[in-house]
Length: 468
Image 1 (cartoon, rainbow, N blue to C red):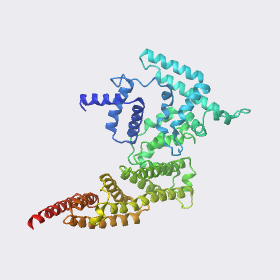
Image 2 (image 1 turned 45 degrees about the vertical axis):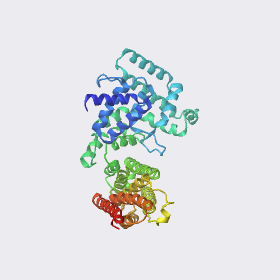
Image 3 (image 1 turned 30 degrees about the horizontal axis):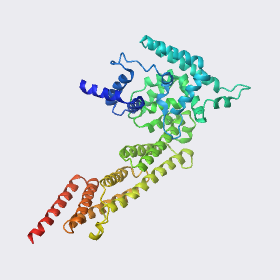
């Protein structure tokens, strides 16, 4: 980008509210972690950081030292989730951070909190970042110690009652994970630094380097292993492939042997994430948001097929039943939407008698585009129909749509040759909708052919009275 374009981008980012800037920064950071549009994301993120930090050069840019809570919880960022969907091992609710911060400042580590805030104030006055990282690490260690202390049962002390003062059960559940991550942040950082930025195919050579990086005792505990696995998954282009690590560690694809190892948690995590993807798809379909449905279906298809083919799952096992339930849920969500498409097409293209057209509603352009998107949705479903258990309904519906739209378009074009002006205007709107559907079903060339046929039909009708 030119300097002028960069300045315009920076001016735009500076006009955003602080909350919008923070949200945008998180989204670009996550895009980089997923390997999506890395060059663009890095550039925009660089400019956004300069705006937020008030610096003009990366080397001079200061981390946000005016937010002690953010600095304390910074190691947790890769594991934070904000949705209402149940969390899995290796995840922490962002909503839990505020009550835990308040508890640390009030009871858990009040002296350490005040000392940290005083250090930040001194750093701001000095205009230098010297000592910021050391102060943050010291406070993180103090917070981890406070969490371990309140979580450890002590004779004569009601531990559960003490924990309940921190927050709701969800907060208490996250408290232990937060303490564990803060306590071992160096090990997690070391793991991340040894992994490639992106793992496109999780084959034997990649797994060898990953297992070597994982070979730290602090990462092998039941509390920390899910977070280490989450770090690895964030580098995988296909996160479901994390099950290959569990299979390698068990030296078998038999689910019983895999589940018997600590790395069996990787399979549970992959199944949870598949369930989350299915829930997101269901929500998007319900809201009519089909822009990303192709990518979602591909992820669901690849994940379900990978779990089913690379693991020897029994139908009556917990993992087997869970995968079957997820596939059934996906199938039901897709089938109900697929079944609705022919009816929507027929409502728009149905031939009406001239006497009924006066009272007929206008052909809504928005509804036409929504219906075209749904036809495209059915077409995309065909690609992944077999694995998602929608093969029969998808093939039948798509074939019915092709036959109905083809016949209706030809019939509507012919109808333009007759009828009064009012009915012809309505049928022209129907023809326009039919041609839009033809473009989705048969391609641009066929749609152009029917468009020319419709234009010729109108011209012939206009000439006929003059010839008489």
